[in-house]
Structure formats: structure tokens, C-alpha cells
Amino acid sequence: MFPEVEFDNIIKTHGMNITIVTSTENDKEAFTLLEKLGMPFAKGKN
Figure 1: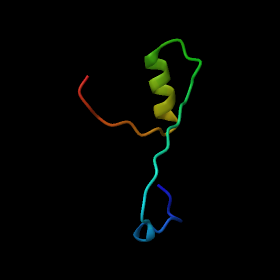
Figure 2: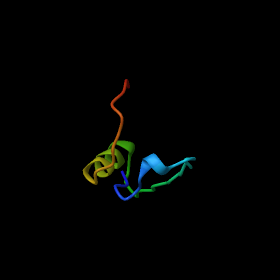
Figure 3: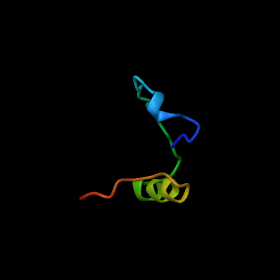
Figure 4: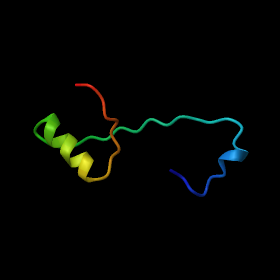
């Protein structure tokens, strides 16, 4: 994800939370929008 980071030199990792808000009318539209923007989603059971 970050090619400039040398992960072999990392001693401790830190997390990051990001919230993305859309103005779509429903979840399907929001999912389609984020998918087309390149947001990676895990394939799972629904």
C-alpha cells in the first residue's frame, strides 16, 4: 500500500480508522460508488 515504507525496518505498527460518508440514497448506490472509486472490498457471504 505504501511502497516508500521499508516494512523490514518497522518495529511496531499502528492502526488507522477512516470514515467515508456519501450522499447516496441507499447502500447499493454507496457500494457501487466506492467500488468504482477503487475501494477494496473483501468478498464474503451475504
